[in-house]
Image (cartoon, rainbow, N blue to C red; front, side):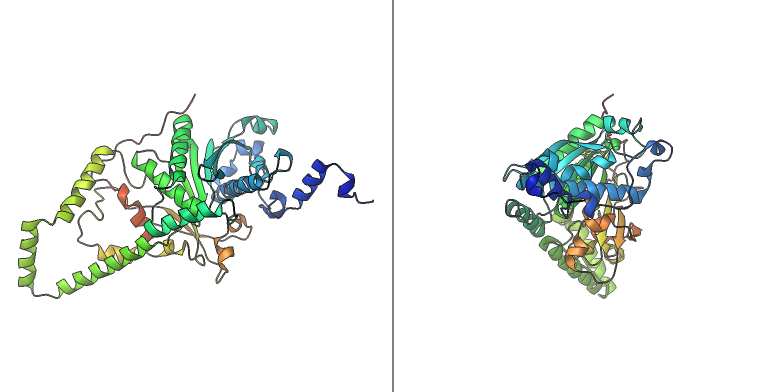
Length: 394
């Protein structure tokens, strides 16, 4: 059979043919062994399988990267790459999140597409499938977006916080809105790299208000100047405590009495801050919000999450307000670690690895020093109250 010359067909058909061979096309680089929802999911939902959920959520994040690339490269609906990454899973795009600084798309809200599901005899949403998903992309090294992306990367690197970014405010308002509309139990947030940093801090902000949203974080950033300085301070404090322990007991008694009498303002300020936090948010309790983190040991951006919490636990013995459990669970996250030996950075930090067929993960719980530190502000000294779950629409 003779091959058609692209010049002999219409421009629209030629554009579609070119995009079919694009390296980011779903059938080219997407997951191989993941099936679309069908009537069998009514009996045994695929969404209850953690591997399936991780794969689909990672595909949704890839779609956000491609939404911005489609915008930059002026692709139209008929040849856009992004929709192919959510349509097979019966979801639809309902909102894009725009960075007002450069007009770029940095996030999106995908919603269960009931009409598309009904067409394939999926009469109801499968158990475990979220009603809506807020997904956030990471850094995109393209000229229209690189300036603002790197600006937020540096913001995290310097301060270990993204709250000063316009993206944080937009993402927080969007997540609040869908949680109020559908109920927080029916919503999840996910991000990759810089997007995972935003997802973690947005999810944590809602958890402080008693709204607990399922959270999936792929290659979340873990390296910052602020964290490095804090590590130095902790090591110095630990060394000072060891030195004090070697002093004669009489000196210790005298010093202890002086401390009790003077009450250092720093300690009093911390107690006051914790008390104020509890009065404002009496329902906050650790363990009710358990983010899922996916990290690669060869990725120097996120590998600090695999550092054990045992050293910090030993150095914090005897400190007040460091671990005020009062019956609450310790800081918790489901940490999934992939280790394939030595890998190049781009491979170890890439999103595509999280839907690969040969993926092997190890899970650790309550074992990350960095997780404990980042979730520490969710501790409560007062009895936990029932969480606010939003008012889903009927």
